[in-house]
Image (cartoon, rainbow, N blue to C red; front, top):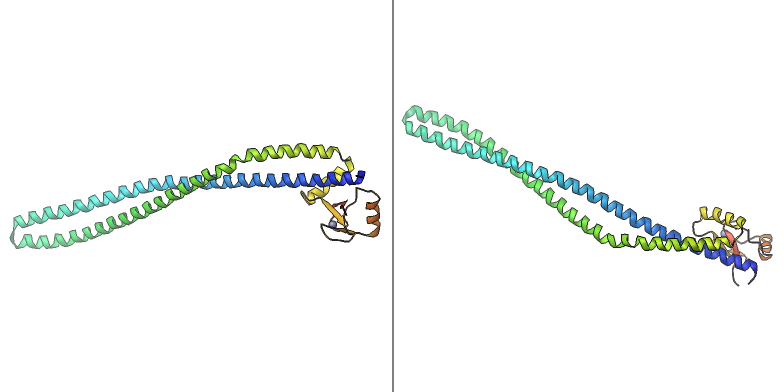
Length: 237
Ligand SMILES: [Zn+2]
């Protein structure tokens, strides 16, 4: 193997390492992002659930109060009717008629307001049930995701190994080459090196000018593709 071929191999293995590291880093980021999203959503829904639980209590309180008012009014009317019946006579009958009319109007209002309170109470309870179900679903999702969160340690171990490998390969390349490599990597993370085959760059398929091809064949390792700027490595024919 010529010195140029060796350097070409190092550059290609460096891109392999960087590509692998990039994929591990992205995987790790994805897992962390998903966990963050799930936890944020769970916290929000738990807060809504706690708030709705209070609302349910308040609505139930109001419903009971109105129910009692209604019962009170009903028993008052029964009592009054008894009194007036006991009194007897035309005057009492007239009074009863009028009082019953007023009382039945009051009763109607109370019934309506008790009915509204019941509806409100039922709606709030439904909202609470739906939120509780959502909380359970999210807790399960968080717990299911824990397995992937557990894999983060392995991903980090893999990354540590790749950093060591990367340093070892970089140590075998001259400083100028590493500088070019890093600059191209900024543009093409994990894909900074292109193979030349049949006189063309295999990354962007641009045909290389004759002179560049000659320089490459003469052993120059610092050349970049005029089409895509990737570092050029002569492919095995
Ligand atoms: Zn190219």
